[in-house]
Image (tube, rainbow, N blue to C red):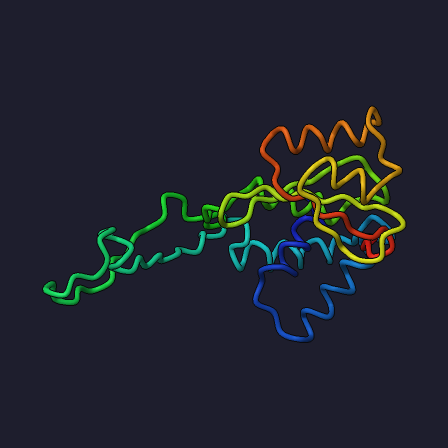
Amino acid sequence: MTAKQMLAEILRRAVLTERERESFEDMYDRIHRFNRCSNAQQAWIEKVYFGQKLDREEAPAKRRVVVPTWQRDGQGARASAPPAAPAVVQPESPVGPVLVKTNARQIMLQKQQRRRESGTFAIPTATTAKGVQVGYINYPGIQREELVTSLGALEALCPRITPGAKQYEKIAGFFEKGGVVLKVKPLEAQVA
C-alpha cells in the first residue's frame, strides 16, 4: 500500500487530535501536489496507520431487523393470543442495503416521464392503483392538460398528429395494448 493510500485511510478512519488532523490534511495536499513525501513523513504515516491497526478490515456494522408480529405470522394480531416479544431477524448479508419490494416498472416509467424531451414520440405509461394504464404526451398548442380516451378524440384535440405518422402509430399501439387514458399536456409546462 502506498503512502497516499495509507494517508487516505488515516484521514478517513483514524482517531486523531485536531492538530494531527490538520497536519495529515496538509501532508495529504502536498503529496497530491508534488506526488512524493519525505522519509520522516512516510515513517509518521506508517506509525499511525499500523499503530491504530488500520491495515485490518473494518468490521461490518451488524443490523437488527425487527419484524412486527402482525407481519411475521401473516394472520394479523389475534385477539386471544397474548402479546409476544418482537421477533429479531438477522439479515443474510450484514453489509448492503435493505431491499424493499417495489414496482420497479412504475418507478422506471416515472423517471422516463421526468426526462421527457419536447415533442417526443415516447409515451411513458404508468399504472394506477386500480391497474388502469395512463399514458402521457406533450403537444404544442393546447393550454391545459386534456384527457383522451380514444383515437377519434385524439384526432379532434391534436390535428397535427395524423394517421400514418410515427407518433400516431405509437398512440394507437398504446390503446391496443390496454391503455385507457392518454394525458395530453401542454408543451410549455414541461420540466427540463
